[in-house]
Amino acid sequence: QVQLVESGGGLVQAGGSLRLSCAASGSIFSVNTMAWYRQAPGKGRELVATISRGGSTNYADSVKGRFTISRDNAKNMVSLQMNSLRPEDTSVYYCNAEVITTARVTLVTWGQGTQVTVSS
Image 1: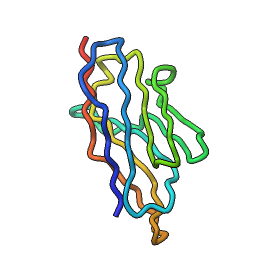
Image 2 (image 1 turned 30 degrees about the vertical axis):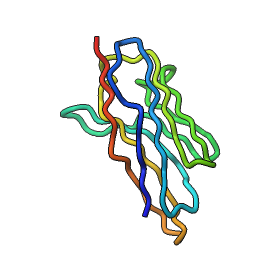
Image 3 (image 1 turned 90 degrees about the vertical axis):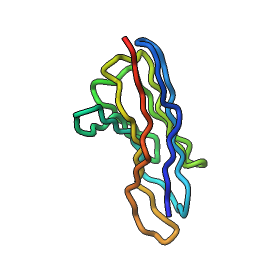
Image 4 (image 1 turned 180 degrees about the vertical axis):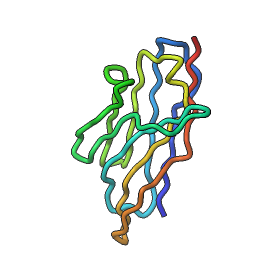
């Protein structure tokens, strides 16, 4: 019914930048909070940043001042601009969204993940 598709991952040197994007599609009435999570090898999934429909944002302490989350409500898209990347930012990044479907069912939906690798 609802899909999240991420794009923009890749390999970058420390200090560089990447921009991740995620588009929601399907039987969508509206999208509430959208977020980015990440999971490094052998570690649990951790929250990176969230953004409400109204644009309020929250960030993990480890990325504050370096990452910026934004969204386009008209396109049901969320982006994550990542600057000053560090090797410890290397992870699979996942898009997450709370979606209200056209049937008025609330779904928490995940993207398939996109790899970000930061070399030292």
